[in-house]
Every structure is written in C-alpha cells, then in structure tokens.
Length: 92
Image (tube, rainbow, N blue to C red; front, top):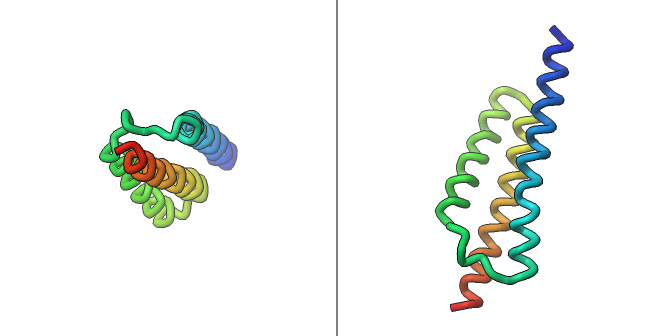
C-alpha cells in the first residue's frame, strides 16, 4: 500500500511540475514584449479561483502535493494577472 501512495505522490509531483512549467513561456513572453492583450483576464481569474479552491481542498485532505502545486500555480497566475493589468494600461 505504501508503494502505491509513494507512486501517487511522484505522479502528482511530476504533474505539478508540468502544469507549473506551462506558465513560464507566457510569463517570459509577457515580460519580453510588455503585451498581454490576447490573454483573457477572465480566464486567468477562473484559473486562479480554481487553484485557490484546490489549495483549500489540499489543506482539508492534508495533501502537500496538492497544496504546493496549486499554491505555486495560484501565485504564478496572480503575477500574470498583474502583468496583464499593467501592460494593458500601458498600451491604452
């Protein structure tokens, strides 16, 4: 049973790394071009809300993989939202 739990944790960590790494190209592009006009603030808001709820779920379940992955994703998404608001205002 412990082997299955360990394997599940490894799968969760790899999944988290893949999901979190998906933010890096957008963050890099936004910082480099100073533009995010083609990215929806509503999409980012929904993703951030979902990730925050996953953090709450992870806390309830006492699952550090769920908590860590979604907390980091939430922070990255908030950074993207801040860049979106900043750069959209800059280009008005």
